[in-house]
Image (cartoon, rainbow, N blue to C red; front, side, top):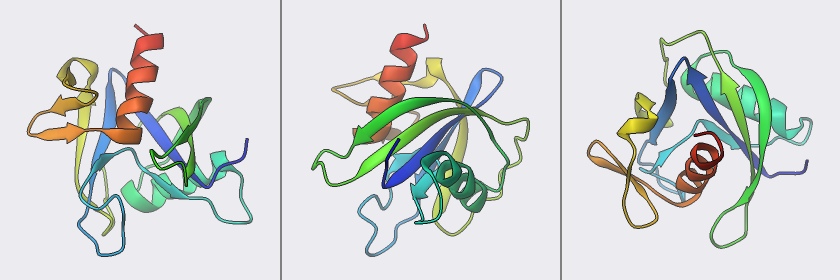
Length: 139
């Protein structure tokens, strides 16, 4: 699987981890709701990128269960590998790229115009499509 970036849909029992990216100049996803992840480095594969980026961003080890597929940003410029993962850890240690994090349940995602409303936040774009596909195929 080839990708430019990778993300992890991390479960701990019936909850999954959502993050809110910090507001940062130069980050096209600044301030958005997302899954932990980021750019793949030259010396690693997509799965390794998801594992490394998760550890860097939220400080928890994960075990990859399976690949969910390759997703493309709406402009088509970035290919992102998504992985279903789990962790026994729940204590998050966010780095400076993360402003908030939430252990969410599927029931907290309220469908709304090709997005999910989650509490006071909107989950849209790539993250919405990954979550929508996952929960549609895993009722």
